[in-house]
Image 1 (tube, rainbow over the protein chains, first blue to last red):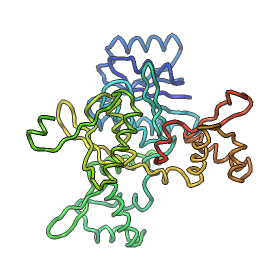
Image 2: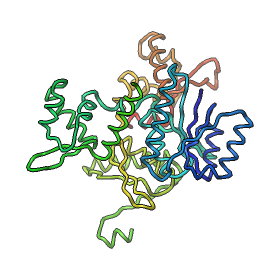
Image 3: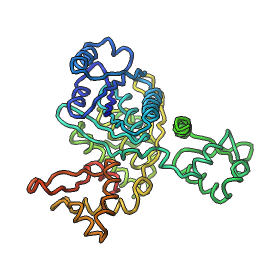
Image 4: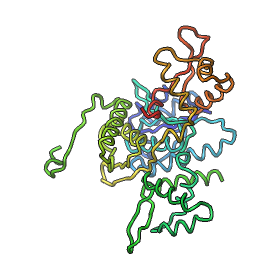
Length: 217
Length: 169
């Protein structure tokens, strides 16, 4: 089944453009609770009912970027988890609703490897997302192992001690250097020592990787 | 501009010809980022909250492609939201063979797009071997197969326009 996720707000023009330009059998509107009361939402639901289409909603706080990002990634992960035979194809249109919601959806598309589009009445733009290539694929196994073991205010020696049974000290140090370059971790001086901690972006990256693995079981 | 000038913060404005041309803006921002990097400048942070929707999305795309620390400064609360971006390095998401194939397809399509058989011949591999790579690239959404307008029996390979951004040029 082709599933079209589309961001949606009171002005439906771009969402309608996506419904026209992109193929789908199930439509999932990503929107705030308030948008349920809009004439545009009622019109779409009525039209889809007449065409015997399936419409679902994914309710988010469209002005909270992290909530939008988490909700969209969770939805994609759950759909993929349910789809054991790999028969479903998910695509996202990011041009409806608030700017925050659109940016969160684009970010989720890149991190989940879901084809993403920006649809307007006069043009459809496809983003360079490679289908199925996820955030996890952009990190090496050693980077992920180190990332998972990182606590608060750890020194490099403490991390080496914790991960040393699986990776060599050289590999751990290399992974830490790379993670720092990626902006996932940062160094913080503490009591005359250099300690490491996750950046804000790193916390979300780790959280997303953990959700991937939880879904995989 | 005046606000920055009053605070004696150097400020430059970049004029965009069309603030709704998402890919045009993304290419422009990316080129500027690369130019600044070449000159040795370090981009500390990119705020993507301002401007039109396509401008914001284009800035986010450029930051993802170039691995720039990105924030979204909330229009109402002024909260600084850090985005969990990891640079997309095409060497990590496409194999060396896939990159070579994409490069050949890209170069050929300006004149006459190649068919799968022609592509196999160029690489000196069997049709079956090339078919495997083509299927992988189709699965990832990097290329499309379309009928040749001059001979509909012939199927030609073209690269998806925005995928070129992943190839690094």
